[in-house]
Image (cartoon, rainbow, N blue to C red; front, side, top):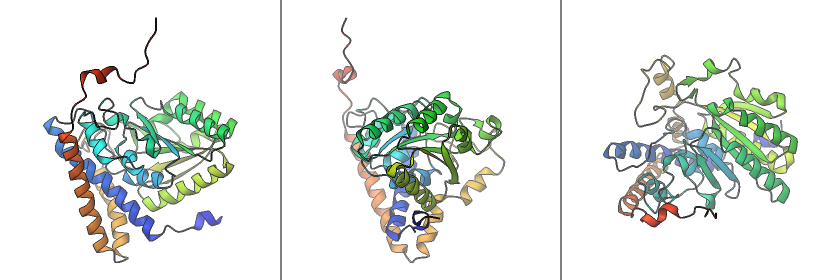
Length: 329
């Protein structure tokens, strides 16, 4: 076992991981409160219950490392450093949103922090991230690229094509599979005999491993190890993190009574709440006041973000065609 494997996560990092998870959770809970008013002009895919993956993965990346995400994008946007006011403004369809109100919840972007984009089309950014990793290799700029996707994306052919290309070209990319058990309403166990999804690409030579996606410190450590090795020329790797989706596929409701869900899953998810687990860990260290201060600060930041969104203007009509390539006859 290398020294990288045994390096502990320091207290300051643990506190930051907790802060990121809580910021994601409370932001999405506010989105749930606002959604019935129809002020949010976008469908929403919530990541409540999955915060540990986003927080641990993004905290292990540098701001200069590029991340490409899926439509369940609030968590990675927040964890990668995206501005919260611009997030809420984007959900409101406002001109001050991170995509000027054009993208909505499923197309968040913060390139100034390395989040290069998210897409509503399953697996569509995996080849884009792989191409970016090729550019990083050719430029020798020390940048690592992360392709972040759900378990449904491994059903797409482009996942295998991209993985094969990355292995052939020895690219500096970390593929992160956030396995929340379901692709919409389709269970992993109904789609694959091999339920350890990282193993699906082993025949291509893509190294991989599976980890508990509800243990934020564990996510951070395994992602940090992979990023460091890849940055030093270790080649591509696939990390699979198992977690749970607490809410319905799209929307603010819950659907534990639906036939596709596993029996007793609501109890299981509550017992594995990554935020509760990390809070208990920090409380054992006597950090009760620090946790309370974090919660107060995060709620205040969310309040400011909502006011920003509420008071921001809608895009003017001319914004509709802005940033589009002109077609010359």
